[in-house]
Amino acid sequence: MPTAAPTIPDLVAGLGRGERRALARLLTLIEDGRPEQLRELVRSLYPRTGNARVIGITGSPGVGKSTLTDAITAELRRRGRTVAILAVDPSSPFSGGALLGDRVRMQSHHADSGVFIRSMASRGHLGGLSFATPQAVLVLDAAGFDDVIVETVGVGQSEVEIAASADSTVVSLAPGMGDGIQAAKAGILEVADIFVINKADQAGAGKLASELQGMLELGHSLEEADAAPGWWPPIQRTVAVRGEGIEELVDAFDAHDRHLEESGRRAERLRQRAVHTVREIALEQVRRRFSHLDDGQDPVLESLAAKVAARDLDPYSAADELLEALEGGR
Image (cartoon, rainbow, N blue to C red; front, side, top):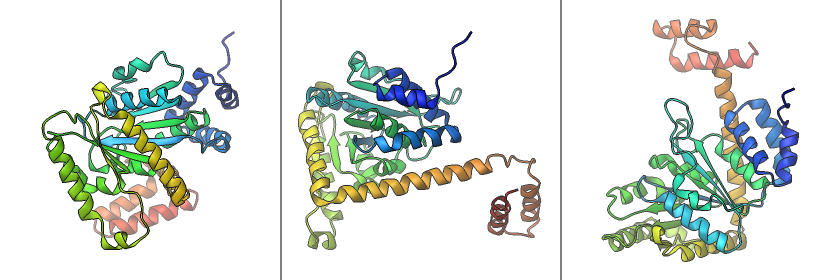
């Protein structure tokens, strides 16, 4: 007889015993996104979480984020810390899966039991983060990893979303990319806790650092200057492919960690993360409630659409009526 599939309580128990297979299966359940499974899983694991440090790494494509993540992981392991990596990749248009798989360029850690690597598909989600990512971070936190690194797709300006899920947000730039400072102007300055100029051995690294420093000083308002001293994002230079500057970068993570604790800002970050998570779950539930409203199949939607097309009703009023119909339990 075929063996019955493990239940969520079975998998949660296996996670508590350190079983990698249970961890992988729980992450698969997260990606599947079935509401009833997600509810049970999160409810079971949430009391065990809150111990991992979450590091977000973002930046434009081509700056070497994966090589940087690999080097950071090696340094964290040298310091005796366990590391989980979530690499949020572009979705395959055919399978919906992650195109880059489990990041072949990180396979130097494949045999290390203190490192876990998982690729997740963004599936078109704006901001470079999959909807499943915060729940996946929760699972890795509950699994007992010291550090969880979330490396995002690198899709552009909307990657500021990573800041809502991380304790420390690293924005990686590289000389010669042309649009590095333009990306910073678009909003990255507001979310970066640490800047990294990777490939710092290339021409233009000093100029990029000066431009970035100037933008930081320009953005430092008089109100901020008069307030209690806060965190000034350091600009770290690295050559990740050779491991140069990585030790200093990890020291900056630790310094930011201490700042959050000593300033009392960690509690505020946790509150902001909770707001973001609850809001995203609520929005996803709304999206699911509307998913059955396919074109031509819902009579209320079709009736309202006909009125809008005939200019008898404006779209916002129609949307209000549709929401009222859904809330009425149809």
